[in-house]
Image (cartoon, rainbow, N blue to C red; front, side, top):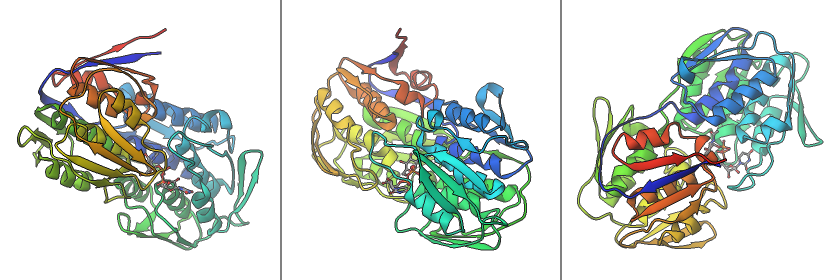
Length: 423
Ligand code: UD1
């Protein structure tokens, strides 16, 4: 298994290009199932999760072609031969559940394996199923699979009132509603930029949607959707991650393609910690205001709040802040697995349930550490950039799910980092 070796090497300087959003791409790809005409995505990220979604769509009979070194994904679903998403692929990635709504809406039925557990918590899919039931679908859970059937004549518009915000359930409901008969109202909808991007793409395909980016989305169903070409929105999590690199080890880095509105709540916390962020024509420029990082308290929330997907990376920054920071994780249980690894590097962290208390230390020290999930893995790399000596991060396949060319991007701004091939 490959490892990444990072050596703390002082201030960083230069630019880092930010890719298209993994999480947007993972919902835009299943949207191909809604139409028999081609859907082409540009600005796609080159990631193993995208390859998993490609395999899943191909297993259903979609044609999926990767062009321009993976930055363009050309898809066609004119000939779907199979309406079953098998466990073998679904178990690799929870976002696989996003094929359920589109298949059900266009073909009237679908069988999708339940995604199962996940390292960062139980993560059920009950809200996805309830939303589709509100559109008239019948759900039957058998042998680890969801067997879904639309009423004769197809899904019908419905009133969906989510008890709490779910990004994935909002996406499944939104896609399914585009082809349902009548009007669907989605209340307490997720407001993430990836939802807005999906709505923009669906509208290009002929869907009638209003209210994306607010907590009420209204969809007027249409008979069919057509083809489109759509650029994937910038990855705000990759953006936030690389913004933390100069925050942690000094210097000035411009993250190309970055926009403040994608990372507003995160920038407020950076400001409080003593990090300057400036919007430039090309992106976001980040540097430290002084020598010290100040402690700040962070609570994760659905967008526009502080994203759970940046909590681990923010913790890496706060490990060397002056004072004590409290991080509250409100979205997922069990999402502090990076804490014991950071403690191996000399961090002082107390975890109690969904709260981590971080007392800043002067310096971190390099150590062998283990990646436990996608965002945890990159937080260890960030900590390694700031640490004295060498940090060796193992299990980096987690990283490949969500960060393309991490070594190349960080080397480009002067970091000392390399990937060692394992057997
Ligand atoms: C998406 C993102 C993930 C991010 C998360 C929260 C993708 C591919 N993944 O995941 O990176 O961390 O949003 O911003 O876009 N829940 C239920 N029942 C459901 C659905 C969700 O109880 O049917 C719970 C989850 O366990 C979790 C919370 O709701 O506690 C939010 O999850 P959700 O917003 O659905 O996350 P995902 O869409 O899985």
